[in-house]
Structures are given as C-alpha cells and as structure tokens.
Length: 136
Ligand SMILES: CC(C)(COP(=O)(O)OP(=O)(O)OC[C@H]1O[C@@H](n2cnc3c(N)ncnc32)[C@H](O)[C@@H]1OP(=O)(O)O)[C@@H](O)C(=O)NCCC(=O)NCCS
Image (cartoon, rainbow, N blue to C red; front, side, top):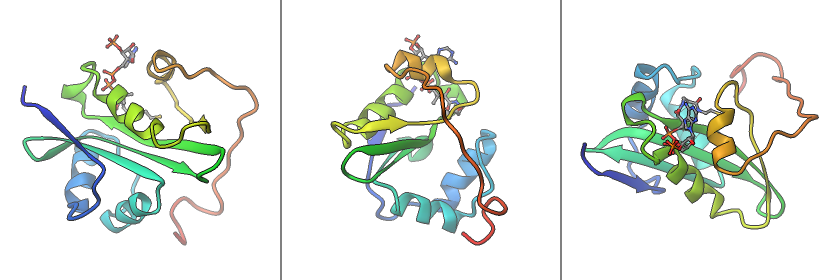
C-alpha cells in the first residue's frame, strides 16, 4: 500500500472530492462541499491524509486557544484502518492544543479513543439548534 501523506494545508483542497470520499465510505453527514470548506476553515486545526492524491483520512479540532477543545470528523477510510493512521491524525491535532481539555462524542469508537488515552466523562449533553444544517 502506498505511503500516506499528512497535511494541514487548506490551500487548493478539493472539497467535492473530500465529500465524495466520505460519502463513498458512509461517513458523510450531509454537509455540502462548501460547508465542508467552512467547517475546516473555521477549525483550530485540521489534518488530511492522502494516498496517491486521494483522501483516505481527515480530522479537525475546535479550540478556544486557551483551555477547551473538541475533536470532530475523525475518519480513516475503511481499507486503511488499523494501520495507525487515525492515531496519527489525532496526535497531530492534539499537538496544537497543549494544556487544554479535549472533549469528543463517539457512538461506537470508544476502543479507539481509549487506546489514545481518552476516558469516558459523565455529564455530557448536546442538542441541535433548530434543524441540522438549516441556517448554517
Ligand atoms: C475510528 C477510526 C478513525 C480509527 O482509525 P484507524 O486509522 O483504524 O485507527 P488506528 O489504526 O490509529 O488505531 C489505533 C488504535 O485504536 C484502537 N482501535 C482502532 N480501531 C478500533 C476498533 N475498530 N476496535 C477496537 N480498537 C480499535 C486499537 O487499539 C488501535 O491500535 P492497534 O491497531 O495497534 O490495535 C476509524 O475506525 C474510522 O474512521 N471509523 C469510522 C468513523 C468514526 O467512527 N470516527 C470516529 C467518530 S467520533
């Protein structure tokens, strides 16, 4: 399998190609390519993983730059899993938020985050304001 290239550079990103890769791997949450672009541009840090120019991994972290951060959109394409790519993406994102408390939500990937040192924390709550993506 070819080498994975990691990048945090937003210049020239093909957002339609990113969405297409996520759709193909059933990890799209209905954002348009333009909404993916804004999500990334408004994040504290982002990571893309590419193999032969194609997106095979992605992740973002939101942060106030002081004490609180939040991991989102952590993804490795199915054929590339269990090779340390997800860990590399998260490690790169965490390196940008030293000293900060980092939260996340996951439906079923607790073993992955446990392997990276995260622990469950009771008391999490969330809500969608209005309807998902309407008005964003
Ligand atoms: C979660 C995800 C990003 C992990 O990516 P990955 O590249 O396979 O992760 P890594 O290879 O870096 O895994 C690091 C360690 O995490 C643990 N781990 C990863 N996936 C696991 C799984 N499915 N079950 C149990 N442990 C797992 C293992 O300890 C692994 O180390 P090992 O392979 O040496 O045993 C990937 O499975 C994925 O994209 N899933 C679908 C999207 C998703 O649910 N993302 C999380 C949203 S919150």
